[in-house]
Amino acid sequence: MRIYHKLSDGSERRLALAIGFFDGFHLGHREIARLTLRSRAPGRRAAVLTFAEHPSAYLRPGNEPPLLTTEQERLCLFAEAGFDECFFVPFDERIATLSPVQFLEILVERLRVATVAVGETFRFGHGRAGDTTLMREFSRKPRRELSLRFRPLGMPTGASRAPASEPSSQPARSRPRIVCSEGEATKSAVS
Image (cartoon, rainbow, N blue to C red):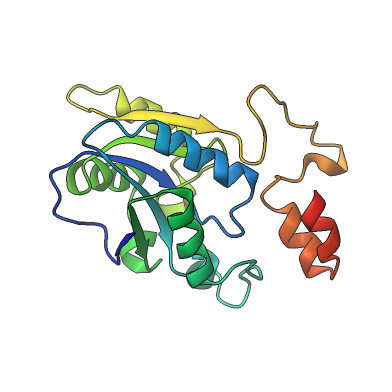
């Protein structure tokens, strides 16, 4: 798997891209990978865009969550999943200050992204102002050749989230980290 440390690669081939931090590479992450790999048409590349460190390390130093996997483990998991490339970039001021539209323009113009797969709760851009609704609107603009694929993280197709009043309404991607941080790693392995 080819690894890039900036948001450019110089390739003319179109790209199917998965975006997220992917700590632990749980079932929801694997579904995003599957969607990405299935959308890779002949002649296209499949890649993942992730950050070398959790965005909280830059945005709220000292308050970042404990990680489930090391950088090297995440890279190995991406390669095992079948990705051709990984954009393993630092989350720094350049990334943190991009508007949502600037971020999407980088994907389309610099990386030549044709399809994007993210979880439905995915947020991006300065102040987390961008979401999947903005991505859909952006992709519908004239001359935008961008197809989007969304799936709620950690949930199979057709499943619904629990009401907010129920304890299980915690986003699926957070539960394993919380269980492990409480010293109950055996529960995270089966849930």
